[in-house]
Every structure is written in structure tokens, then in C-alpha cells.
Amino acid sequence: MIKRLFAMALLVVSASAMAAPSGVPAQTLLWTVASKSRTLYLTGDTQVLLPSDYPLPARVVKAFNDSGELVLEGDPGVDSTHVSALIRQTGVLPASERLTGILDPRDARLVQQVAEQLGVPLEKVDPLRPWLAALVLSNAANAKLGCVPARQETNHFYALARSRRLPITPLETADTQLGLFAKMPEDLQIAWLTVTARRWMDAGGQREAERARIVRAWRSGDIDVLAKVLLRQFDQHPDLYAALVAQRNDAWLSTLEAKLEQPGPPVFVLVGAGHLVGSDNLVSLLTKAGYRVAR
Image 1 (tube, one colour):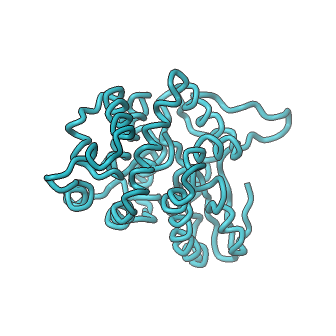
Image 2 (cartoon, rainbow, N blue to C red):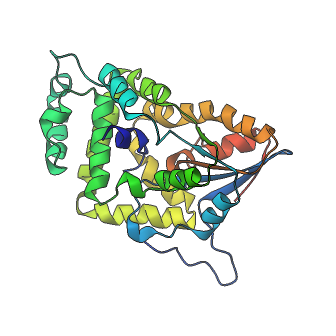
């Protein structure tokens, strides 16, 4: 469970590709980023795929096959014992406190209701700090839709890269990622938790339709729809967007620039799809940095 929690995408809660006009190649969520020395293939992970959503878009598969290195948001192969220790240190409340005790009564009822609907016993959520509870509920919501981490893009390409013995670089280590979440002010952690819970409740009977809409937009490269669906949770919480998305994009930029300045085979970069749309996204940051960026 610990490794699954660490590997999940943070910002998202199948269908065939949308048809393109005759003679126009189908577009997908994929960019090339080129310098004088190297090319990156930059694409996004939805974390809501079902087995029926495979095979992945042909252009994405070809980009990976043409690459000599894989860059991921986190490290799916991280040692679970180490992550377990980090979570005990950073994600668990003191024994005298409970999550429902630090939430206001309305939010506490919301979290209890969502946990019950998702089949997560309250006693497993109540000892957790809000950021970790948000991840637990997100993971449970995806599982409720049949979306298991092992079948998502990150683990798919990680396994392929290992089989090809490709170098694999995480943009964030477990220590960095969990430390970032744990250091968030408590009010932002609570906002993250309540936004996660409300998203599940608000979707109601349309949860599968929303999942399918995300997959269609991802497969066809519809960045406007992806931005609307993936980032609307931040509409009332710009500080949360800054902490979970924009600031992390800024931090990742230096690693990607270093890859671009090192001669070598193309690099396949896979991050959460929410990092590629909306304001301050990675695509716009790389464009502003002067690299040649194309769909």
C-alpha cells in the first residue's frame, strides 16, 4: 500500500481517440522539447486508465521506444521500508490527536462520509495528517473506479524501462516529495483533503463519465478539457495550486534543462498530466527558457 500511495499522481481523481479530420494526423498529449544537444519527449500520466484503455497512443509508444532514458515524477521502485518510516515520521498525527478533531465539524462529516463510501475504515484515516488522508482517499477513489496503480502509465513505462535497462531519473525522491507535503501549512493540507473529498461527492453518478472524459482528452491531446477537469479543484485555492503544481514545476525545470544540455539519446519524460496544462505548466516554462517546443 505504501508504494502505491507514493507512486500515485497527485492532481487527478476508456475511450477510443477522438476522430481527427481526414488527412490530419491524430494528436495526443505529447511534446518534443529540443536543444542543440538533445531532445525530450514530454507527456502526461492520467492515473485513471483501465486495462481496456490499452494500447497507449502509438505516438507516445514510439517516443518511448526511440528514447534512451526515462524521467518520472517520482520513483515507483522506492524501497517500501524506507517510505514506511518516512510516513510514520511525517504523515501520522500525535497519539493524542485525531484528524476529525482538527477539522471543523462540517469537513469532518464530509471526510467520514466519503471514507465510508470508498470503503476506507475511519480508524485508518483518523490517525493521519490531512495531506496523507488526501492521498489515501484519492487512491481509494481511483480504485473504486477500477484504476489500479500497476496498470497506469508510470508503472507501465517504468517496467519497460527496467526491462530495457534504461537509466531512470525521478524528479522527486521519496524524501523530497513526502517532505514537501508534510511541510505544507496545515490549512493547505486541510484544503487539499476537503477538495479531494468534495470532488468525489460532487461527481455523484457521473464519476465514470468524468474518468472517460479525462482519458479521451488525454488520448486526443485536448489540453483545454484536461485543464478544466484536472485543475478546477484549485479554482478557490490558488495557494494549493502553487504548492502542489506550480512550485514543483519550477523545481523540476532545472533537472530537465540539465538533461537538454547533455548530449545523448532522447529522454522520455512522464509527469502528471496536470503539470502540462493550465498556468505555469512545464510546457510553457520550457518554451520561455528558449527551447524549441512542438506538439
